[in-house]
Amino acid sequence: VLQQAAAVKHYIHALDGKHRDLLIRWYQAKFGKELKDNTFSKWLREKDKILARAENVGDGNRGDKSRMREGVAAPLNQALIKWYGEKTERQEHLSDEALLLQAREIVEQMPPGECKAALTNPKVFNFSPNWLLAFKKAYGLTQAAVNKRVKRDASGGVGGQSTFGVNSRQKPSESTFGGAAGSAELWQ
Image 1 (tube, rainbow, N blue to C red):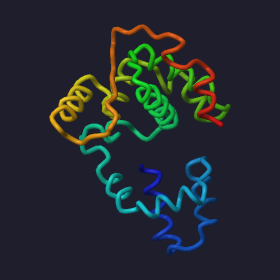
Image 2 (tube, helix red, strand yellow):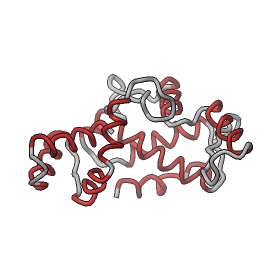
Image 3 (cartoon, rainbow, N blue to C red):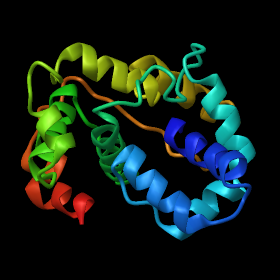
């Protein structure tokens, strides 16, 4: 969210809403990531929402990624939440162990570069229980958040939303977390 907001602000203020090619080069240099024109078009359509979310980062709201720093683990977090969503759509319950194993698998499948180097350096990043707890809190995956969603859905709350489930007693297996093939496609 912070990178999206920075790109939108730079485009509006520094480039006066013109020269997307300059913005795309600026984004590549600033964040080391490719920005596609259609992705930025979507950001512009949602600029008010993006800027509002960027202002709220760190204000203590639960479930809006405010508890996660936009930093070295951001690509890992994005890939892991995508994988988690795919698994829960198929009604699979995942343990903390399965999440940690998949996180390690995702990092192994990353292409070589700064991000992978940082995530494999124990002085920079650690697959600790604290990281996992912060990840789960940021994305609303704690048991308390799951129970709250289940209760809301049962009482006629917002319908049609998927309810993530976490079962800490389940043992991870090859079928639970998809193996190397499941995470390799995230980086293609």
